[in-house]
Length: 110
Image 1 (cartoon, rainbow, N blue to C red):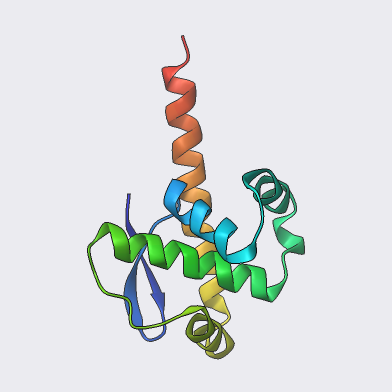
Image 2: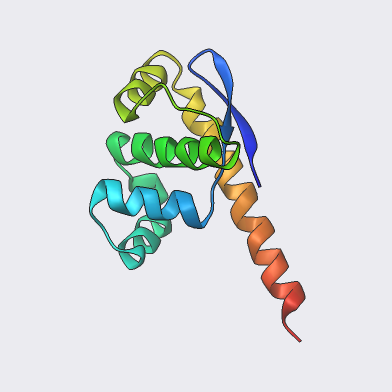
């Protein structure tokens, strides 16, 4: 499900799921297992990793809404530099998506 993240002076489509996780892994050159380990220590993620995670979620959101992206991960870094609270807003959206997915899995378990 696509949500909106206020970043770079705009509300932008943002989606955390399979596609964003794959985009992040490809961008960072890591496996899904390594990503899971990073999420286990999210407070230890570097600024560059957080930037790329947010970029990957934006990329997934734009793809889901069939919108053309006119920015890259370095632009996202510039936006974060001017509004670091965007990281907190993004992490809240990611957490909400992860919790919703977990609840759905539990409800499906007999």
